[in-house]
Length: 224
Image (cartoon, rainbow, N blue to C red; front, side):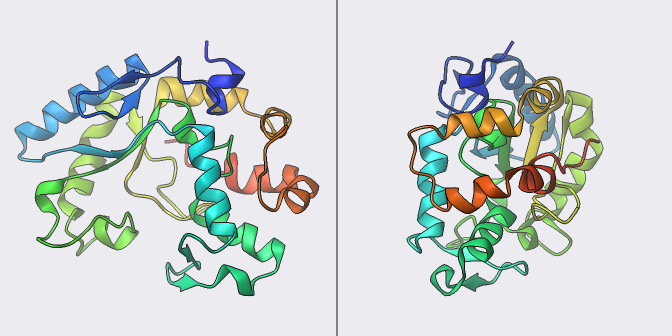
């Protein structure tokens, strides 16, 4: 059973290294190995772009976007100046694309972002935007193949559709047996406790709105 510290990214005792330095829970790592091998048989070089991420790393991402040290995107995926937004607008803009510290599914060791480096055009860096993965994108064939086969290995996309919270993320895979367990355990109270003695930017407004934000941006995911 995953502990609260593991659930919120404050412990990494539940994850093991993959061969390329990324980390997942052992069960998810074994399933991903199988998916990877099946992909290879179809000519895809399936690789993780991101896997386990701890609380402190998520905090750096969140605070960086809040304070304008990292790029922030609007709903259409275009850059915006976070410093021109009020606190509420800034927080909701970040939540469209990035999780709150303590609430990232990457804390769980069940989730990862994927790509195929062999399909990335020469000189092009990975952006992790929908246009790369959907029709016409250079990873579209990989997306289509995953649509057919990822379920055989118990993976699914929690952000397959725009449900009014997090933007679609065709690259984000969840290993169902572990992710569903973590989803049941994470609550607003658990999340809030993880912020104790932590400098989470915008926390005053976030705390005042936490139940609604939790429903919209954390619990509001695709289940299939």
